[in-house]
Image 1 (tube, rainbow over the protein chains, first blue to last red):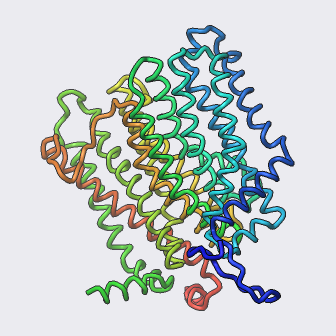
Image 2 (image 1 turned 90 degrees about the horizontal axis):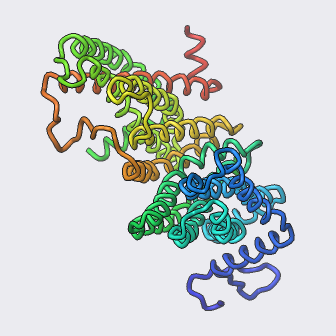
Image 3 (image 1 turned 180 degrees about the vertical axis):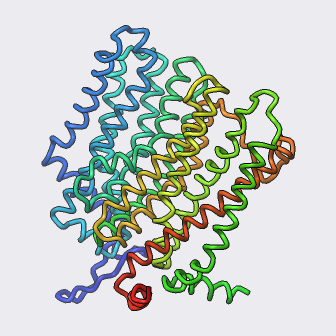
Length: 245
Length: 249
């Protein structure tokens, strides 16, 4: 890595040789650290999944247990529950780092803040979005989703949950320094989640009715790309503001 | 030309100069909006012809459309002012953005409310899950988010910057939300005014509407300047010129 063109050169007062750390190493370093932290506090992984399962269970109890009826609302219920589970888990994205001061270290480091934010979002997706996506087909069985919908449900969640994590990171970054962030973050983030919800459920319903889903999936992919490029920058700028105020 | 604009732009960044110049503009804007709104309302309610399908109930368009147009343009202005505040660190831009939010939220609410009143005789329901209505409702939620974030911070500067970022994110999202709900469900008639095409209505109907739209813009300008001046006085109350202003009266 020493010859990497994009590396940053930092001269250490105590060791005369040049220490260079590339932004890629900063990315993987943050990734490793965050994964280790999650591994040490495993309840953070399990709780959103439990929440997801319980919310889905409420619908048959609250509305109707009949299979024809549940089949119609299955896609929407699973998507809304995934949305809420992601939203509630966003609190943990920056809160812990804010409390122990490591967030400030990330902000004053010479690497682009967006790179580290992206790494943290990736960890968040790996521990909430990905398990949700894997769990969803199982819950879809309980909701009597017609067979044609499974692969599409899985694909839309696979592309949609990273978008949710990325957009949610902006809200988490804006509210990280504040007291009682939960309700405020819901107000900020849920309106921005609506397009993902519309195309996610739209694709599954199209698949169940035997229509083409490629268009829906393409738009979800486009939304993911836009979020991937812009959300880390916005979240980075928001973090700097939150730390000042 | 460019130099005069840059000089003007920089002077606009000074709260004192902004306060002085808007103090001179407000009477003009207020008189213009009063004249336009009175003329437009009388024309629209008394002289414009009835709609051959909807009868007199269509006349609510003269409130509904201007409010809906303003609701969207105010969000755009708020995001632009927020961007100016973020990039050039102009205090006045932050204050303008802050003053925009409640006005925009009220306009969105007026558009939704008049839409519901109009929907009852036309569609037979107060509310339908139509694309435009849903998009407006989401716009209202975005406004509420911006207002809530502004007041959540202890420091006014951080609140202004955070809500500037949120409104920029919102501006990127508004077209996405608009098209997603449009493909999802559509019942609403297409836009009344577009820049490229002649309106489908006869001139006796759309000319008063245009008068109302311009009147609403002037009204918004007046209210925005008044709110921003209040905000300036509030935030600059420790400065010499505000103290002088207060002791003079």
